[in-house]
Length: 207
Image (tube, helix red, strand yellow):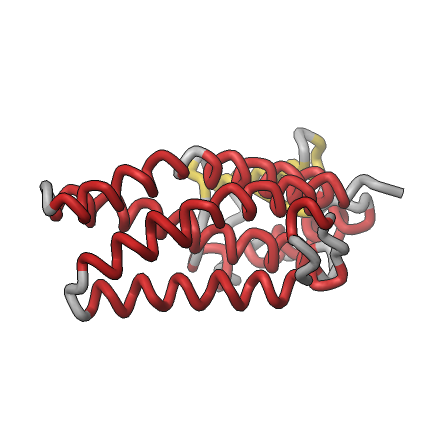
């Protein structure tokens, strides 16, 4: 078996995918890094293939592992999420206007689904990213000009309340309430949360 970690060969005693992963993860952790990509015989592996790695011997295979600095990885993910959320502000306004005018509701709802997917990523990236670094995001002291004196749990609670209102409006086919929730509540929150994510990214490299 030929196994590479960041283009450097490593020794593997157990010639299976699970064995190679164990060796690569251990070595990466010793270097203060985390595995971000696994390629087996030219095919990237994801999801179940990694979660339940095969223990069957594959002595003739080539496995390549790529690692990254976890702080830089999380920081970039947070910056990307901040940028993605900031780019949805115009979409929030367009969706609300279309719903209020009763114009092309199916198109507005499709656009809303895409926007809500970005919001879901916002909730996941901060918690999971900080969790990867064994840090508690709730300990962040969000600046006054961003949070208006509120802590992160309170901000998360307010966001959750608005997202639940969006879901309720969708389930009840209440397009007027949906337009209000998207245009008057979530739209300004998009700016606020974009700044929160950018601040949380910067905070990772602050002394």
